[in-house]
Length: 244
Length: 232
Image 1 (cartoon, each protein chain N blue to C red):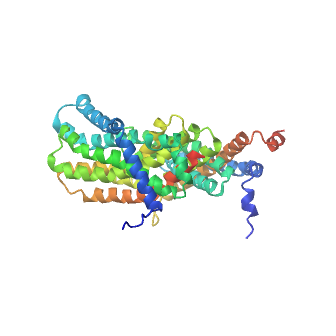
Image 2: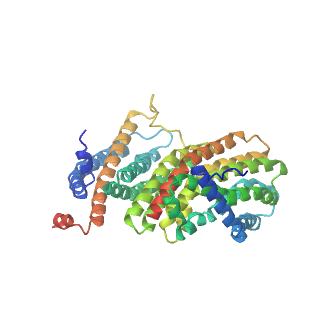
Image 3: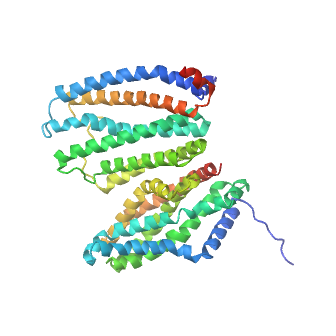
């Protein structure tokens, strides 16, 4: 089998160009989907019979919570690729994921707190999923802390990659242990295979938002990846040509 | 007739040597050995002062206090796990000695547990009494801490390896390892709570044991990889 296409991904200028080409292909659909889903979710969808209009925060809360976990997976995958094939671009991709992941974790925590105030009567309860998100935020912060704590770039890349992989093994354990520890969070209402407990006119905007947020992440990540590649390759000759 | 002297080589022999060396080094510096224990005692005894001297109330928070105290004390001793050996070049000798680094790192982790986890476990009942824990709960506390502290040492070894290249890595080390220690803390405190209430604690003990097995299987690999990276 010809692996040339794979090895090309190890080349920073190649990735820099591809990322530049792909960014609008993710960015524009993301913007359109998010606007459409916001209209559908905030205006068209009926109010919840119990929570009234308060439930509408789900259209921000659930997608960011989904992304916070997914981004960790993407980050760890990129880190593992970088560790195994010694691919610097993969490490750069992992580095550009961390900030976005931490940000979405923060957004899901804050929207969760704002949602908790009218529904549970308090901003913070030690609910398992909120707690797991908080731990995830600390995992992200630890990852970023380790990355910035090591001066040598190659070592920072590899050490943080090991940490990301250790984190991936741990996240499910942390989630389940916290789940058994204490639970009042509402049961998952989207990810039920047989029949979602949400009516279609509420669910459709949520799924659109989910897709929109994911595409948005892809676009932002590509922009950040380009910046990260430029930062790392700043002394290379192709950078001067690319920036002229 | 004297039998020919057998020179044992292999990863097990090398690991035993490392273990022996670490224990000997530690015993020659008893002051350092006592530090985590004293820390554990001080932290635990701050709670009656800061919260309330009533034993009934203290008993209610005793599981959390004991576990958080043990967790922090075990973390305190982690920094020196690889640092001195990295500074004097012993770790580099480990790398080039031809034995798998995983085995040697596992031996160092075991030494860390024997020198901190085990003494902390043995001290916990004493501190438990100060928090109003009934004597009947002591076997439960001992067994849960003994199991849980193994996993804490294993997770800590990964963190200590990762922060090898960081200049002042103490705070970062805690930031890396504490989130990973959440499951141990949850099940350990739960087991202690059940022990204090006089109920069966086999459930959380099994979970602690399974975390320990999982940690013992995977953590030395990650720690060895981290040390290798830290020494580059």
